[in-house]
Image 1 (spheres, helix red, strand yellow):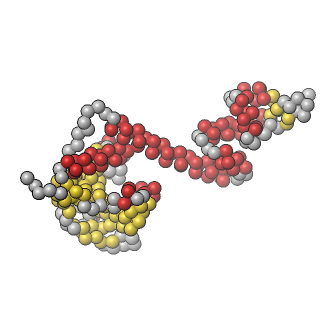
Image 2 (cartoon, one colour; image 1 turned 120 degrees about the vertical axis):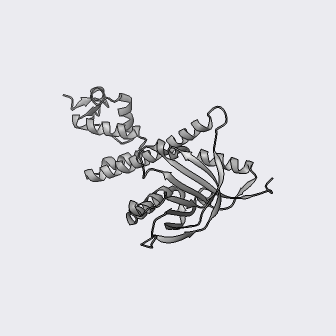
Image 3 (cartoon, rainbow, N blue to C red; image 1 turned 90 degrees about the vertical axis):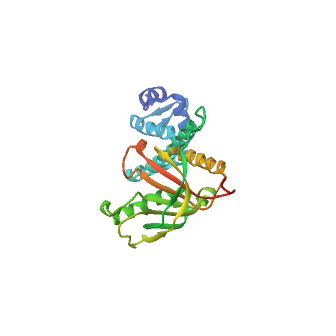
Length: 272
């Protein structure tokens, strides 16, 4: 009398192929309940169907074998859930990067020249409430930005705000993967509180372009503005300025976002 389901029966019930089940066995992910010592036939128990399907889904998500083993070995359901959640977060981040790359490529490969409306302007001197950090890693910059803006928003409710928020970012953030970051809000009465400082922002001449829509392809707008700067015999003289005229904190509709990008510039040749 056989002990359990044959590999073919188990494959049909779990909706997995016999080849896949053999591979899971060979890699130590899913051992059969018993193996006949004379025929080497594999036999499984119905209670293993759920485990087989979990393994299959994890491998579909490219979870490394070592992580799959750790997840299966975890006896605490909460620990298993935390291990899976960690990998899902990494997948979501990778998906975001992939989507951003696709969006940029589609815009870059669009037939014909990509139009850009750039202009020279002067950002006036002003006093703002700001949070700064001298050295932020590029891969941590979005989290740092969100946390800092949350602090500014909590300290200065909408009734105290008198303009769009913005940021100033060192070029080294991109060129070297680490650099200074400052985010700010113009408010009626700036005051220091916790990490928040009162910042005297001097007037600065900028070459400005407006990026419309989500930030997935904002690098393309940066490139177009850089080409415009070079074509007008201008040089870049400092960190980039961004003003979030309409952003994620104003609307959940990315197509409505408006980000003003400004580079401090100086003229390389005398103006005609």
